[in-house]
Every structure is written in C-alpha cells, then in structure tokens.
Length: 253
Image 1 (cartoon, one colour):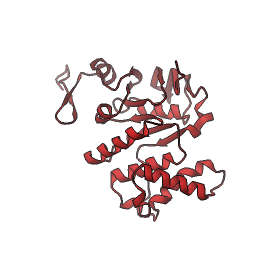
Image 2: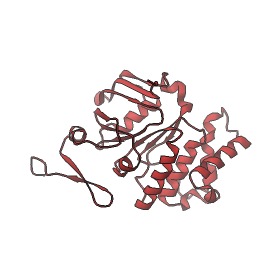
Image 3: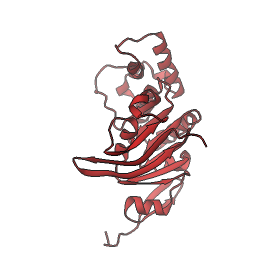
Image 4: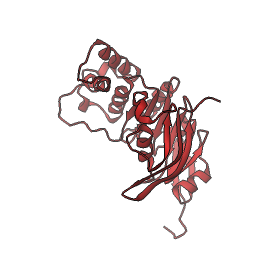
C-alpha cells in the first residue's frame, strides 16, 4: 500500500485553552480530492493550517511525505479564504500570479523562468487573455482562478483551497470545479467548502469536521456523518443541483 501524502494522527489543538480539534486522525492519499465540510467554527480552516504547518498542534502530529509540514512547504499551493487585494491598487493579473514565485527567492528577484511559470499557470486556469487586466476589474470567479494560478506557479504536489467558491456565482462554480477536476489528475487537492456541489462533481473522499473528524473514503456524504458533524439532523435533497435542508430540531427551532 502506498504511503499517504498527508498523515494526521491523534491531533489536538486549542486557542487560548479552548479546544478546537480533538483526537483527529486521517490520511490523504496521492491524487485524492478531499472535501472538508462542517459547521462554522468547527475547526476546518484550523485543520488545514495545521496541515500546512502554519500552526503547531498541542499534541499529535502531522506528516507530509513523512516529514513535518514546515520542512516541505514547497509541496503546497495554498489559496486562503478571502484573499485580500487592495481595491484601487494598480496591479495586473499577471503581476498577482507572478507573486506566487517570490517564495522561491530569498530576495525579490524575478527572472524569465518565473514569468514562464506565471504564463503557464494562467493558461491552465483559462485566464491568460486577462493577464493585462487589473485584478479589481475581474468577477469573483475570475479572481479566484487567478489566485489558484498564483498557487500553481510553483507546480505544487498538493493544492489546498479554503472556501474557493464563497464569492462565485453558480456558473462560475461549475467552471471552477471542472478546472479542479483536471488539476486533480496530476496532484492531490484538499478543499474546504460549504458547497455540497463539490462533493457531487469532484470529491473522492469527504471529511466532516466539528472539533472531531468523521472521514468517509468516498465522494459522498453519509447521514451518520452529517448527524455527528453538525450535531443536528440534516437531510440532502436535489432539484437539478444539490441543496441542504435542515429538519426541525427537537426544541422546535
């Protein structure tokens, strides 16, 4: 059996002594598309920051290619939630993507190979024709594709995205998921999302996080997973596209 790309064992983490994650254990296989779901405040973003090595666990361990995450940070392409771009700042799409190469340099030196990498990433994300546009002139979906292109400039083994469709309309979400499906052919993808559409179109595994983690090694959501993860009954129905409908709680709310 192949070694996992990411291995998390008995992980605990708290903020100011308030538990956020408890006894989390799971593996991510090579070229898996893992969708991480769960309620707000359940620990989803904290979990991926621990996987990236941006936070250190209180107990337990995270290993990426059998090494501490900080030792292999070059393996990750990361698109955080709510990427901030100063509105009105005159920066082009190409310049935004080119910034993704700076982590390879001790000093801010950009050469021909960096420009080639930025151009390739824009091509992959279907945004090359917008390279001279100002980033602020793009739609939400287009901006998200640019930020993913920025993460791709280092050709990462693992692409991690935190709520990539939060500000993207339905049509833009479908296009973005198709692009992610193509990227998944050559790399592992981890996506935090409230959008159940990602599970139906892309995911090969699902993890529901609400302090603890409930893992399912198929691209589907089980009723047990939702009941345990959301701490209330949840029912899934579909009318052309997935919707989430909450049953009435026991207290009548």
